Image 1 (spheres, protein in one colour):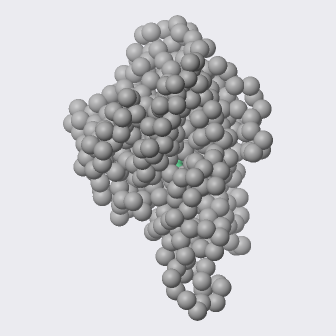
Image 2: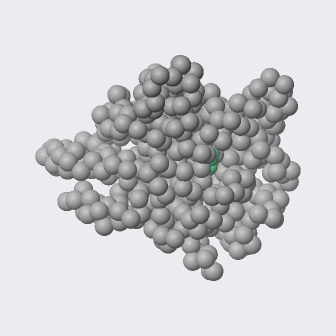
Length: 449
Ligand code: GLN
């Protein structure tokens, strides 16, 4: 009955464009099978989820919202999908996103933009916009997305729900289409912390198919959430005074910090002078990795192939790629090739790697004295569709508060907290923690939601 209700809602909200494909029959059949069992199938028995179109699910389409993968069907399931299903989850469909997870507004999709359910004239955030809206609009209970530089936290922020990016290496990336492999991490959208914790518990942990996954044991996040503990929270005055930040968001976060102090937490300012280096560093490194990861899409092995005939092999590749990739993806491949090219490699790529190391060390030092760092998730609330499409730099700069966690590989979460008084849109607060400290992060947030 729950699956049917979700299917009805999906049908009724088609204009939001959150779903690319709905697994109607399969979901109904699975729900029936689960109903017949005498005992629960697992920790997620009957939990209905959607999955971003960058995560492999055997037998289903998988396109990264790109023309270049049109018609491609996954031949194996991602580890996360296997684990969800093994615990009794029902996957109701595949959701829209920015092409190859590149973007902050979900406007770069071959399937068209996703609309924010709180105000359909606005973007839902990106790149996991479909995931966010599917949960925001109650079309399913939770969703898996991917977060390379904020793609789970920022859309969660813009849609008024919870978005968690785990520590790099907490969750297997096997079956996740690569954007920037040393940044990518699968993340969770949900409406509550216990739901987020339970899904994290299910999808985390060592995996023979991904050598970058940590052997670190997986706590029973959902049952071990602690309450009543007092924490040490750092904030960066530079971040709250940044020129790009909406003054109302800044004031709300400052009020939140004051409230935490009043509740007995230790809240302290920490000087942080790296803020303006973070976005450039992120875009140098991620475009470099993307240009390499995306070299496999040549139109020969899978996906889109140009109907053009009689071309030499090199021209054939060029034709397939020119026709198959969208504008933003091409921009990033070009940028990536540039920063990796001889003559520029040391000036950009090597330099950016150094900044990444400095930032990581700096954050680790802060976590010697503090449990969390508190930041806004985004400098504004969800903006209007089309508002930033002609200005990619403005779009990149808006990633200022989220990319830090991916550069350093640390866990970060956005939780819904406020509604903007003028724009009437939700926004939240972001907390980051030391590597593998998801339990503290979730425990603290559980008392704050
Ligand atoms: N907006 C960022 C980008 O375009 C983040 C994307 C992501 O996390 N996948 O790269």
